[in-house]
Image (cartoon, rainbow, N blue to C red; front, side, top):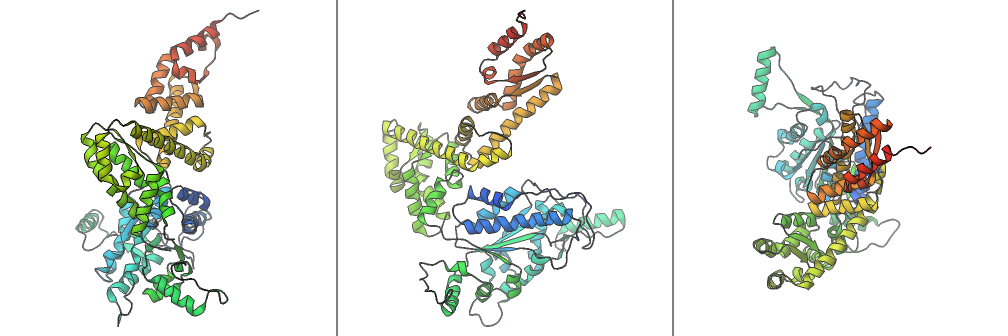
Length: 553
């Protein structure tokens, strides 16, 4: 998984000694605030407010602290420095992995993910654990300085807890825990390993050329470790402890069905679960995820950034079929998913089950629109027969159009609420016209709202880039009004043309007239309005007539 980095690092390889000071130049261009990252997560993830706040805060603080220390020329390895590695606890399918991937994409640092179970098979051979760090260097394209500020994510961490009730040490699992201790805190990892023939060949070639041995290592002091797991059975350990101690001053305890016991987790519970105290000590931050209810699953499906819905739309669009969901159909899918007790993962399963007959059959027909109804979800094969027998049904067409209108309204409201600050930060207005263009882009390209918004802003930037390019080439300064820029984007989307090409074609028509006006009046700056996009010949003729109109005395 490679991610474009927003963090700027020095290019020098090989690392530095712990006591060496960095130069005064800023090495990390990171200014994301916790609230900004939490707001980004809110756009994608339903509920989990406490977990989102914890991860957003600690991860932003981690990188901003590094930036601060480097800027202030502090020692690169301060004594007693604490790394806020994070452990995430929660049932399957509640968004733990999804949240970490979103964060890594947003902040743009090197990121590797692995399952802890792969290490259980080989016991406590430390080289396997250190391979995670080597993988991080690969994700950073070999840039050691960049890799030193990456994120390592270990899923299924509960699977390396020692087996409870086992007589004697559980060597294979506790060995993996011990192998992780040094990388999670600080150690030097050798990037050349004996069993890697390529590394050995590179070392031999370097020695042949220089007569010196090359040692390439990476220090893990600033690599953030995030681990997660479902921790089945941990609730029972917590409940037993709380039943012995009581919550607060003799507070009445609820039954396990009524209470999320994981909220009260402590380090001692994780140790009793099977982790060594030294391992838990290196994970000072705990984020607990709540189990998702039926209403949460419904909100996930309604979210315009829902990968479940977006992916299915793309599947059908690949066959030229436009897919739209009725609100009641989403509610029925959520009900079926909740019954499976596997969280958000069940949404994919029930959606695939409902739509598989249509995905198999409709591409071989002339049907190019499908509305997902509650009837379809309840009886996919029966509803398929109805659709095939009534391909031109006015009822189906009406339901499709009504569901599409509701979807577009939902998209617009989401952008209005969630993206206003984003546009304000860029110095752009979020007009009704731009709301419509973003929703059009999302619908037409089957993009989630975040991607559609970013694509729209990119199209606007292309127009501004054309303005600068035109001035360098012609000496004339042009500025497209917001309305004109919006219309250019709209035409590009509806006609399937590039924004830059549309601007170039428009100025080929206007440039000669603009030069005539410049020669007549000396004017070399023009605002291109929406009228020019609709009818460039009429627009430039009007400007020329105004420029050559006799001056009244």
